[in-house]
Length: 208
Image (cartoon, rainbow, N blue to C red; front, top):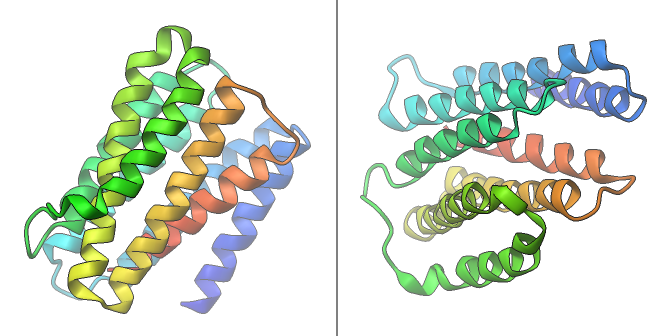
């Protein structure tokens, strides 16, 4: 398992390097490969009998892989990629609430709602025709964070802690991605986006 995680980190590092150095061909190899390796990690975590949680996480990872592919294409497929990640988050939310139902404690929604509102206030003036897709995605990401918090609150297990950390990293990654795309790209954006993104997916895979 440790060897696989090291392999994932090497693949992720190679993608980031080839992205920074503009090596398009090798970028197209290592971006999907990294997510595929995380799917393998999730499969190895799964017991012999697939439970609902594991199935939903694997579905979320699969749609994340589809989103990765669309976002790296030379033609702008940002909306399709965003839609793929939207579906991935639906599966993740369903997974996080499996076993005890949706987490409805509004007290734990407030921090995510405040952050989402403030970030959209900064971001939306720069999004042009993308306003509605961005608002919808931000909403589902807020629910994703809320339900991850709820799972950790209810279960207080290591696997639930992994979900919580994964959700935080996902929000950080998507926030940097949105800032870099709509407001201003910066030198370390690719490094920060992808380290937090794949870190999030590794933690979520390990939660099975």
